[in-house]
Length: 57
Image (cartoon, rainbow, N blue to C red; front, side, top):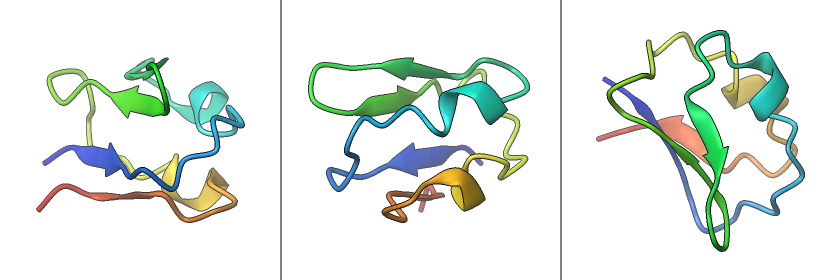
């Protein structure tokens, strides 16, 4: 199950560099996670200063 980034994202980029499979990219108003690429490792979750990343439900 992939992780998702909520609208709380401030586009700081903290999550991008820690993703081991480069599943996170810049969207129009927030960063987005490619569900097909995400391995659900959770590395990005702890890096987000506004807690905008969570497991997809």
